[in-house]
Length: 330
Image (tube, rainbow, N blue to C red; front, side, top):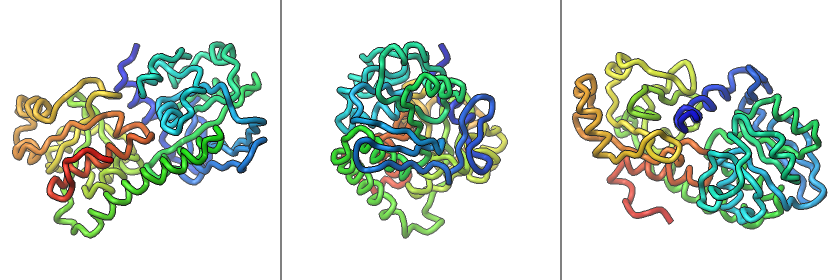
């Protein structure tokens, strides 16, 4: 089985929106930002318009839900609908109850027959799901809804949307409000910082490969929201692979590496710094010389789910330790 890191990077690379409207390239759905709109009526029967601009009608509140992505699963449990999730993917391991559910495969390639046998009245898919598989499920009369949150504000919209389609709107609205308040608290704290106080940042998915984040990626936006400057902000792609020469030339002040969760290894700040200092190529980089290397939870950074706010707060503390408390978030 591919590593979780390789799956994450593959999904990110193949779901980049580069053209207007809805595109299908190599069997994978791509959506531009102006088509990530999702809407629903207020009561059942409920008519939903998802990110594919498709209308789906749910006659009654769903009682048997299949989630085809870890972020959907996390949101469902967070709004109190977890007891209605009858299956999810092999990558859904949060919260712990989700890990114990029956699995229908990966979220790139779910087993349609397994999904059908579960007789769901709602299937929640996400970006990266094959068009062919979505078409097969639709042809089999499965009620498939696709979401595509690609930023923290869009994740909050997805929480509210999933709350409406699962008849859990009050709990979802309350959760989204709490998360949004924390998000606004971070952005308000760094809003007045001059450019000189915004450190240059290199984000890495792992220490072994120079996969990073560029314009149009939600992590690039998180770096800005946390009061930093992404050194790859002008890259040609949202999820570029950088060269070492480029890193040396940009000389980042802070290095952030994903760890645990969706990433391929579990690291501490100290271990990540030691790893880089053991490689002579990195010894002259400012972040390595000054010890400003932070290992942050990979799921918090990469999954558009409630823990994304944890990731933003952790990133803000790493970039501006004097501005943010080290206490655990509320």
